[in-house]
Length: 131
Image (cartoon, one colour):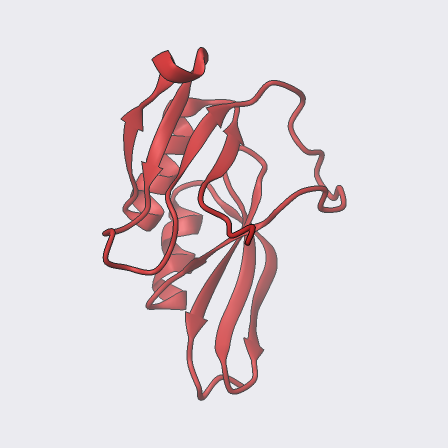
């Protein structure tokens, strides 16, 4: 099987990105730069007893994605408990809306945002009453 076990988010400003993901999603970070040979911070996204994976913030090695550019990679979606509260945290920490909140009828609320580094990510709040 080829199950995803790690992700990397490419960033221009490591401190700004750590602040964004730490404040919005309560992630913590471990400096793995010596192993990677460039600025690289492991992202602990939750307790090991929770479903999900950990990843890293990695110093971007090329130009960032351009505004309005079609998706050309993976999009990470974070499971959250309260869509509206998370939306407010994203906006307060410099994120912008890429695709507004919408219902996945009978399943969840979903939306997409752009982080402080120009990367697209999603948030997903399970809700059987979404419509």
